[in-house]
Image (cartoon, rainbow, N blue to C red):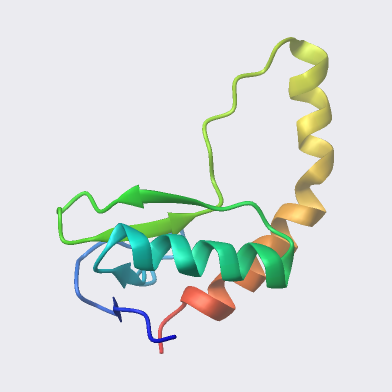
Length: 95
């Protein structure tokens, strides 16, 4: 299965300043999302490129904390987040 993905096709960058992979269709981004979630046990979502050139994947989602305890407990997952960043940079980093 060949996906329509481009690198350096837009100026969008990740938190480390690296170029994001750009999927030309939502369907291609969804296919990659499913593959990555299954292989790496991570939760991803598809979103539209700010420049309107296609779609990107991200592991960051808006988090609404129900209370202070939930917010405090969220910080305990920093090690998992660090590992997730390494995995994502491996797949979506510069090539």
